[in-house]
Image (cartoon, rainbow, N blue to C red; front, top):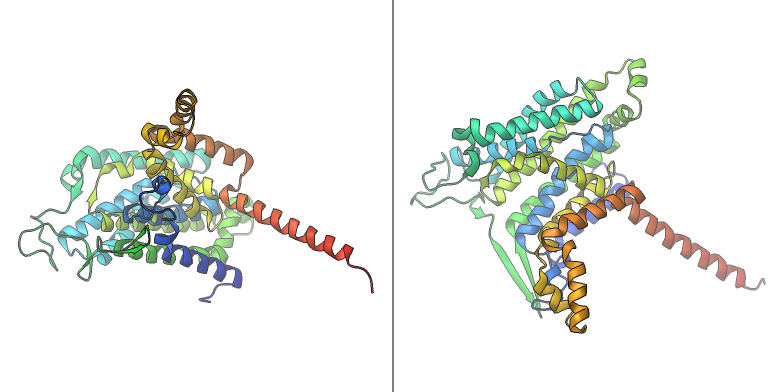
Length: 398
């Protein structure tokens, strides 16, 4: 299917199913129930799952295949966001041109940064990318204030007059797809469950599917094989007459374009941009997403992005009042003790839980969540094989 092997086609269909059915899968608990706190099927969070999944998939093409660890990838996310917002302010509020501009501008900037940074490897490369990202953050925060809006950032205003399709009554324009606003949603009530289908989410989901498909093709292509050779042994590549830098620079630019796509989608969903998207912590976040899910795997970055954004938006909102509701069945003294023990790991302390989880994955599951899933699947297959052999041994010979 579309040039994919049977195994890759199955994986693509799984991702397609997860994207299309996300409003159902992420809202498993009835509204108003004690467990509804863990529902994540609302548009803003679903959009974040998809957009940061694209960001992590692109980063994985560089880090997972070549082993080059960029600590400044958020710069391309921010560059793409600024390019998209200016496209909407000046040209049209239609999100497609804005997203395309974001990809092109981020790719061009990645070409410049990669050309300089890839003169070094290892930690020196990582520090160079971090330096570029922090310089861009500083420029966006203060030096380029007329272009970036400085600390307050940029957003669509009622004074903006794009060339095509701008508001004519002086109102604030809304990002749209051929007239349909990104915030348009439809709700479906089934019993005590409420499912929301958002236009912006499905547009972002379409780009995730496209980005995921392209990543599969890159992984399976001769170009992807060359990138793995870069990670394996650059010196041996040089002996064969191949130039590693040409391949690593191409991977760097492609990865930057993925980040630009994610930045453009962030603007399409929420038409405002701030310099904080380029800060070093945003770059560190995508590194953690990729390693947590499984660097060098196809599905891992998407899983890692989903887990971190879930913890950031769901686990962080659990407070002491909710904990007391959960443990109300316990005696008062014991209830207070349990709440005191659990509270440091949720709410504002969700970073502590994230750090512990990350350490456990790095120590016991170097392949990330994907490796964990493979181990569980292998365990089930082993048990099934053992049961089959045991049943065969008990069958009397004829």
